[in-house]
Image 1 (cartoon, rainbow, N blue to C red):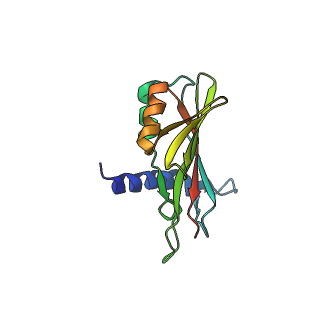
Image 2 (image 1 turned 90 degrees about the vertical axis):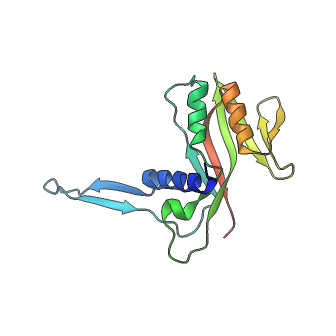
Length: 155
């Protein structure tokens, strides 16, 4: 598919789940719903997401599906609704904590090598230059991504 439409779909998914909450008024006689929208005044330095899994031993297919929904870049203005005329606030995926059978690993983007690195307690290996390389490594080894860190471009 088109990367632009996938990125927009990912932003819309996040917007639906992160940017607004519905609450009921405190008065017991009140049935009105109040919607609170969140907007960014400025981009944070780091934006994080958690992926929740139904099992601590997800299948290859479950991991592939979870990562297929992730985009390596997020336009935060599309998620939280930027004020009119605001500059783009792009966040780029830079780190993923993952686990397989109680063994934790980290995938980290390395600017100097232009590649994703895989690290654990005893090693550091180059995975490849593309997020697709990370997806393949996760699926092949059943590494379940749990915590994703995005770094925001300076405004």
